[in-house]
Structures are given as C-alpha cells and as structure tokens.
Image: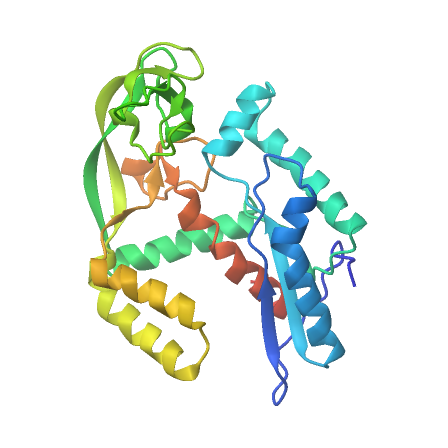
Length: 292
C-alpha cells in the first residue's frame, strides 16, 4: 500500500466488515511536519494496516483542504494565486506522505470539479427543503481593496481590558487568547493595504439548524443505542443540543471557494466548513464506484 497515485475502486462486500477510515484533512497552506504526521495521519494509518491484516474490507481516504481565507492569505504572502498555492502545497503533501509510506487508498483535493458539483447539489437540496435563510450581517469592508475583509485579513488592537495587543486578528487575540469578532477590534486595519476599513452590511445564507433538531436528536439516539459513537462524542453533542442549536452562516465574501449557485449570491462562496467535510463522502464514493 501507499501508492495513492493509483486509486483502485472498491465495493462493499456482503458478509464482511466494510470500514471507512479517514484523517482530518490537512490544510494546504503549509508543509506538513512530524507533529502533523503523528497527530493526524499516523494513527489512522496504523489502524488501516491492522484492518487489512485482519482481512477487513477497509478504505483509508484523506486529501488537502484547499479553500478559504488561509489560502488567500498565503497567496498574498507569496505573490501568487490561490490555485498556484494549492497546486504547489498539494504536491508537497503528497510527497511527504509518500516518503512516510502512509497507506492512503485515495488522497484527494477539495478544489476538484467533482467536489464543487456535490457541494452545490447538497446546497440545492437544503434550499429546496427550506432549510436555509437569508440574513444581513455587519462586516468590515476595505474601500481601498474593494472587498469585505475575512477574519484573518484584518487586525487591530484587542478590545479586552488589560490586553490592548496591537496585532490582534479579527477572529482571535494571540496575546490573551480571547475569541473576537472583527468589528470588535479597536483601530482595525486591512492586512493587505493597512488602511482603515468601515463597517458595511452584507447578506449571507444561513443553515437553519433549529429546524433540523428533531432529525439530529433521532439520529444521535440511534448512534448511541448502536454503540457506533464514543461516549465522549455523544456527551459533547448532547451538550450542544442542550444549549440550543443556532443558525449557522454557510457563505463568505471571498473569491477562492466553491461558488454559490444563485444569481443574487454570485459574488460569494461557501464557507470552508460547509464544503470541506463533503470531501470525506465524495472520496468514499470515488473509491467505491470509480465515478460519481
């Protein structure tokens, strides 16, 4: 194993244990190091090898997570395009995992055309079932760069009393550790041009998680009875349910991402946490059926 340049289609085998094994998708804007290997792919690789030795019909899949703000930021740092960044670092990731002989059956990419097709199809299903809503948000906008600024594209003084760190990011202060919203920053500035942005309204699409609560509770209870989930996973999920599910924004004002297939949102893309998990399902189908 380990030759994941040559995916071999696999089918479920009746009467055998059919096991899907995944690792967290590594982000594509850096070079993986030993800590990444140990903390992410190595344990799954050991389990995959164990399953194969036991004769189980196991598939081990992974791939690079390529969309989102981090890629756009890295592209600016390297005076490159997001696509060039992804091509460069995806190749590096593949070579590193090959050197370690990680036995992936499939190592894909979230920026593939198939990923876009499946992501947009899932979105359309949500839309057709009225599980989405449109809401207005206040976001920082840079008039010089002519774009809304994602969390990581803005910095300023931390608003936390006693901190006032002058390079706090729009999502978190690295000095005191407090989670932030970009509009909370004092003296915010665009990381690209260093000018002061202004607050502006922008429309986004939200997943109406409260409407899905009953379906989620039923599913979680079935997993608990079947013993398919760990007790820790069940307790954490139940804690979230007890707090009450909230709407979740699934779109972003970015260029690099899966396009939203609606005319009124043609200048937006899907939030990376909406599109990336679809990769697990997509690559499993690719391995099982060879084509979608």
